[in-house]
Image (tube, rainbow, N blue to C red):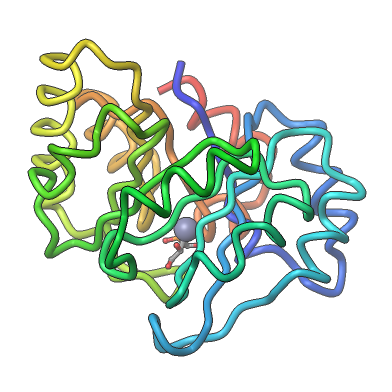
Amino acid sequence: MSIVSPSVLSCDFANVQRDVEMINASKADWFHIDVMDGVFVPNISFGFPVIKAINRHATKPLDVHIMIVNPDQYVEEFAKCGTHILTVHYEACTHLHRTVQLIKSHGMKAGVALNPHTPVSALENVLSDLDLVLIMSVNPGFGGQKFIPGAVEKVRQLREMIDASGSQVIIEVDGGVNLDTGQQLIEAGADALVAGSFVFKSDDPAQTIHDLKNL
Ligand code: DX5
Ligand code: ZN
């Protein structure tokens, strides 16, 4: 049984409440919320008012993935929006250790995302401080992209690092996840799967979440 975090980026923004309630009623574990600033990634998604609106209806934890520069500046505001897990990008943090402590000081779980080109070894000296590592299996910025197969090997390497350290860090994977790629990732040692277009473009999103959950 994996953790499933449907990405709200692919929902129908004219019917956010309806889609949030679908996730509430489904087997999903978390809400994956992608915040993009048009600087760190070449796209802009949504900000605090939308997260607050989601949080008014969501009955499951908010798993917030921020693809923004200067994340420290906004950590407090994300906490106020009801964020449970706040994941920043390794590539956007000059003082990652400080950022991680800041996230925790606001009562949130701390995650770090790695772009496809960043090796898992980059996290060696901060791993014991983390609650979650997000392996990007696409270049961040857009939903509906093709899965980059090298992510599977990165999950395997990270699983070894975590097991060797005896820590309980969650491995989450984001981008191009479907039943096939999801299966490969779970076999490699992933704990949590993010899925956007695969869920929301399917005929029966709640069933698709159920199928991912059973991988
Ligand atoms: C991409 C986002 C993802 C995106 C995944 O930058 O981080 O969470 O919503 O979408 P799919 O599952 O369609 O690749
Ligand atoms: Zn994401």
